[in-house]
Amino acid sequence: MSDAKLFQDSAYLQKNQYRDSRNLDARAALHRRFSTAVADWQPWVFDLLQLKPGMRVLECGCGPGWLWRENVARVPDHCHITLTDLSPGMVAEAEAALAGSGHHFEFQQANIQALEFADATFDVVVANHMLYHVPDLPQGLAEVRRVLKQDGRFIAATNGDNHMKELPLLVPEAVRQMTASWRMRGITDQLPFRLENGRSLLEPYFAHVDLHRYDDGLWVTEVEPLLAYAFSMIKPEMDVPETAAAQLREAWAAKIKAEGGIHISKDSGVFEAQK
Image (cartoon, rainbow, N blue to C red; front, side, top):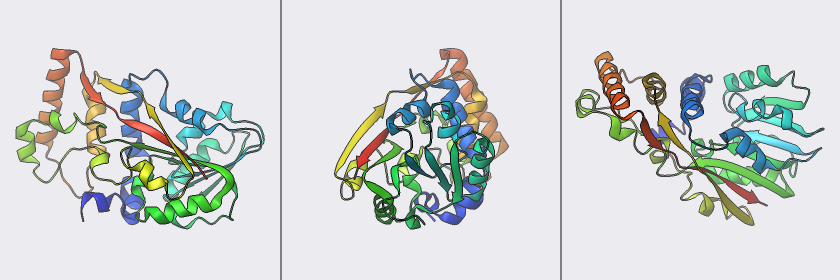
């Protein structure tokens, strides 16, 4: 199975990559600790939701609930927020973190391609870095449109072609040869919904589509978080030799010592689509 198909395979996503939040945690930790952005990602996305008291909100692919955990004090009164994810493990983590928040959260396992909600239920639907996992994206977008109210808004985050573009170039040739079956690369060259094509994919379903770009980059000054990020993307059946990991660690440590850090580009943003 190709990498693109693997990252859209429901069984793989539920049982391996997103069985729980460990792989996501490794990637998020790198961004959180070494970001050069003025505003943190989750508050920046939350601002785009433009929530008002009493709104009904659906998040598809909520993961461990980071968007709400980091903004819980900013949620307006009487909002009804439903968090869903394909992975029951992710839903359980989100519920454990938010169940005592004092706000009206509901949690359930759900597939964006077959949402079990009535037509015109929600004021806002959120998909934060998850649409590239949807095998039948047209069906998923049709479902989002169906459950949105007439003036509802869809907030969809993704990455662009230049996201983490330096990461594969940081792998020494000796390690490339040792791990011929493993290509360290970003998610954007595997998966189909990205900044470059998101507008054209959304426009058949929504009357207005705007793109908000997030100004950010990474200045990485420690080796281990970068290794954890890289290994979080590896297929479970791939056995990376310890000698390869050691060579990566040595090469990246030397680069950080010589240059003070490693610069890695980021290319992320949010599409705001209105029905």
